[in-house]
Length: 132
Image 1 (cartoon, rainbow, N blue to C red):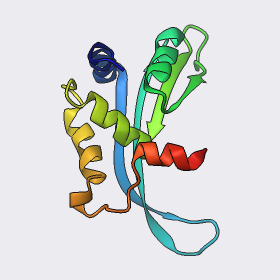
Image 2 (image 1 turned 90 degrees about the horizontal axis):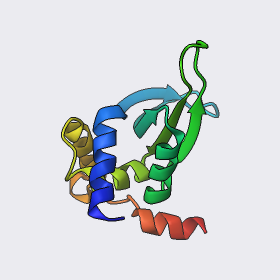
Image 3 (image 1 turned 135 degrees about the horizontal axis):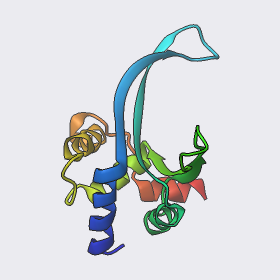
Image 4 (image 1 turned 180 degrees about the vertical axis):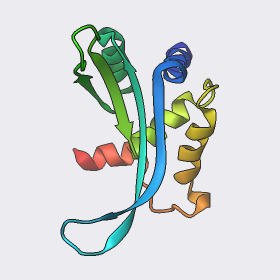
């Protein structure tokens, strides 16, 4: 991916994107105990499917889905979404160009930083190689 693509995607993300970085307690179905659960996600939504598909093709991470309009006068929304390690990868790519969502992207980057006590995090490349 070239610098222009990263800057363009960062602009789209600042304008029509969403960052979720929260921690909460949830029950696991197999156990009766609560566990801390991190929800880390980045999303870009818009009505133009071609741009969302282009983002997916350029980044090679995440997934694309259509969100049906609730009313007939509204347009369907196309969403590109990535979570956890892929969100970390995405945050590192667009961080130099982000303005509006810079603080939230920094939270994701800091979360996966080995200096912050997360030494067991696998790089995205290692994760992809293990999945094959």
